[in-house]
Image (tube, rainbow, N blue to C red; front, side, top):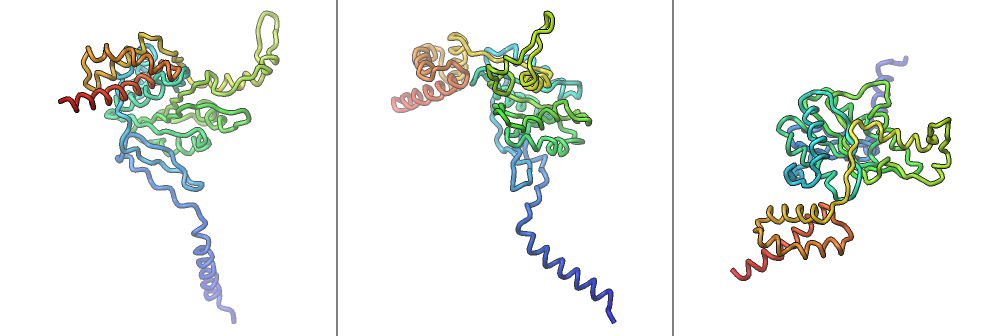
Length: 297
């Protein structure tokens, strides 16, 4: 006579052996975030699973270090203060010239407001498909999270931007009030624009109606409530930034004046008078001068 209990035991034993064989092929479980380990995190992937990796040493830049972008800095700072205080605030898109302080501004805001609960999670463009999962992970936390997408742009045919559109303002479910998206881009509309697309533009009476392709590209940028542009620095602004960084390295005013010609030649060689180029020159010049001064002492 068949014993149902023995059949069940045999089935469970076979199932356990099967699972043990499959286990090495399964993706590892995502580690639980240690929210006390850091104030900044990277979203990383391990197989198909994503997890938050703490950033042990965030960039130390401060708002006072960012020169000649006072208007942009003031507006993003005000928006972030509203957000940290639990008041309504907007998603932010910073566009414009490379090296003009866009991403540095986000890093400086973290240092300014981390003590008040601000946290930053950096997500690479190719991981934007995971944005809904990231937002679900953050919902209900008492901290205030900026999801930071640096140097954001999309190629033709790239569909990952749709995940960003949904989180910004395209889902039946509203985003949690403790999460905002801050993104930087060198492109004004985040996606490539082609001459042929302008041919789709139609005239209706005295109104101009862009074609569908252009409308879709503009619609992504328009989902950011605060949209600010950054511009190349003129010579005076560039030298002001150089002077600031040289002072931060301990250089005196007479040394800073002596460094100006070298600073201009440095920018000329790189074809850019950006804040990043100014910082790189200051490191090079202060390091070389310090070594000479050290040998002569």
